[in-house]
Length: 304
Image 1 (tube, rainbow, N blue to C red):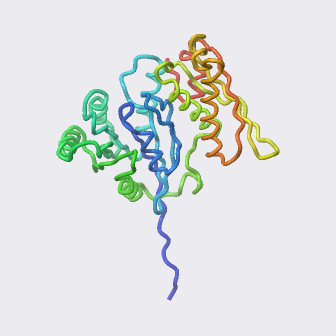
Image 2 (image 1 turned 135 degrees about the horizontal axis):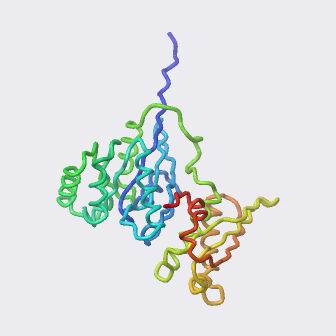
């Protein structure tokens, strides 16, 4: 008799995460992947393009698509972000619908559920921040959401603490179709490092200036040079729309941009596992929100 056992077939697929702004999508993606691949701030709508995080569980590779928060668009950039979010959902094998249990089903969350009725992909409901809500309220929310949309399963999770996330990963790993993995085993994101580094700096910018600075800012990595000593020199440009915004980013005697740079450099260095020399520049580019090239840089389609 042969000692050989039949190999367990691998599974893989794309799982889109959709929800209202600040429902906790980016935090959940980072939690499921086990590493930071998506920026997280208390400022809503900070995820602009589709960010893919790659989680492995048992024999399955789960490609998590963190989409921008879905909301009623007011500007061209908003419109591009919402279109991208729904596009990410339509291309997925499974759709995870994240609802902030504290906020409940109202506003943007209610509008998302109404639109989901016409979406054919398998849908799974995630109630987030469940540690802050009474059990009876969670049961009412579950019933209300399942009346509006036919969900395969409902999971109660805390993206921040990881509660319920192992059960969710196990379900996704078993539910995805059989097939080869899309990415190498040790890869956690399909974002190029240049773009991920720019996203980290944008996160630090928002965390530092969330009240003073509007959404009219964008970070691009313009130069990436690997040095002979094993370090890397990175030059990034922070684009704003007005001189007044440039002064805010620079701060008194350059204090603000220096602090942003120090924080970003530390985190980029930890991800790269090498010494980073980060140089930040601030430039005014009026009406960059109407420039098709900037949208391409962010991975968004330019709305006509």
